[in-house]
Image (cartoon, rainbow, N blue to C red):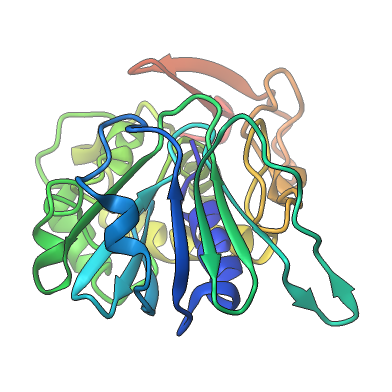
Length: 283
């Protein structure tokens, strides 16, 4: 599933095609994805102008001049592809329609934004803009990891007394919004903290190292366009490249990249997810 860097990369790719543009026509080619679409979604989107395009956790949000906000979740395989866009000297032609093109936005600037989702685990909903953050998909989310709301004091208080492994705690979207399996593995490796370590047992110094490392890993991943492992693509169809910079994720049985460590990367299962770590230097 795309994590924060992938979703942020998609948001940035959509911005020049959709920001301040009117949706001339919205095609909705099926009644649902993971859940049913809201009633009359095509009619409610057609003619609306996108005033703001932003991200909350792993959700993309489009504030419309109709006082509604479109909430988009990419799910496991969802992709939002932009065509008909002029980028420098290059022009992206509109591709032929595909089987899994479930929602298509025809914009007034002649670009087309297509939501393609082969597995149909994605989701879209409409909510009043004024209260969108109270929507059931957003209401319980924790602070954004790249915002000032996440700091050492907050994280120390959030982890205090937690008997769960630190890996599980950092994946809890109520604690921090947007972190997923790949980037938590990378963060814990750089912090030299075992994913099995109980959250409540981290020292003040260890907690203090986590916040800047979280920010650094996410910023590096966004700069690389995210990580493409299976279905993820950027809005122009390009792959992300952060997977070439993994220090630990998906590197089972390979040598640890910490200088002088000499350990071998191991994989364990935690809550149904694979955790990759170095048993030698992650304690």
